[in-house]
Image (cartoon, rainbow, N blue to C red; front, side, top):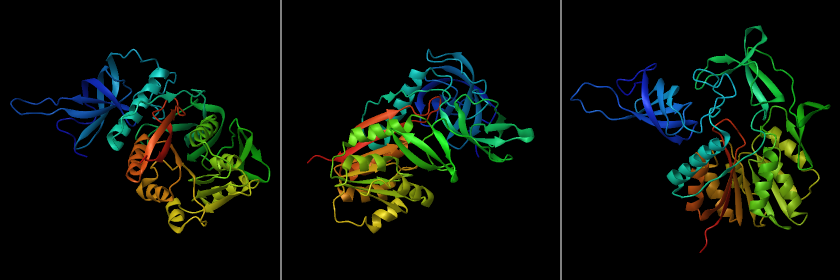
Length: 395
């Protein structure tokens, strides 16, 4: 890649940091050193291991035609929100798994709230005050871990934006009995999450318990990694949607049917729930998890294709739960949902930019952002989970 001349990887430059940006870094601008009278412009650098309004020495780690990336290798003027990272590997050149260990926890949540608000402003044209709610625990929370196998039986994690591996003896965000996978040089290791137990007839599956309901989950399939995330998200979705007996709901990108089960319970036998999931194994497990609810059905297939083909009934859809992968639902799915004219849509999102883009698509399709809640389900990292309520635009 071509650097914004005359910067190169390894250069060090002093910089005053600006606001937080999506992705776990803050924005700074640096002036290239040039010989007069050549006119120069400041170059944007995305800085990790820094906080807003700090004076830092930045080591350039990556260059492109329009911006730089770098690490704060020395702090000359520290933010009052700076703390010593609890993990000895959370530093420039160390493990790339945590972005915010150097930030006091309340400030971590403020930074995430700022990112959500900025994405809504930039991509959806909405001014929204955002509060990210705390969820315990903030260390030892990750119930699944994937390590890289190293010679001699050791394991490690990768550096930020790198294939290089740092040996890790003890990851401080890993739950004590997290399910562990070792890739590349190591074979898979058995383990189990604190909230899981193995199933004798199906060693590739576990049971996860949420609010008194048990869910069969593929051991290598998707499930929220924070132990309290399923409960927190279910409670938020139900509170925002307010499902009523007799209503009909769609659960899109449904996984093993987490939201479907609680929707089925809420709408009762006079209502209906359709669980749509592209992964066949997850859809089959959703069918098992919903077996006690005759009002619930599963559809295996891509969400956009299932919506295009129709959902097999003339009955109106009242509610939609939308929980897409990180890239979001995108316009085709949003337009198909809006065409069904549900009275409310709960959008569960792990990427603020994708959420904001899809909120704009919903607005174009006649739906407004009525409420937004955000949860710190990935402490010490830049990741955050949101639940948005979208309702038809008032006439």
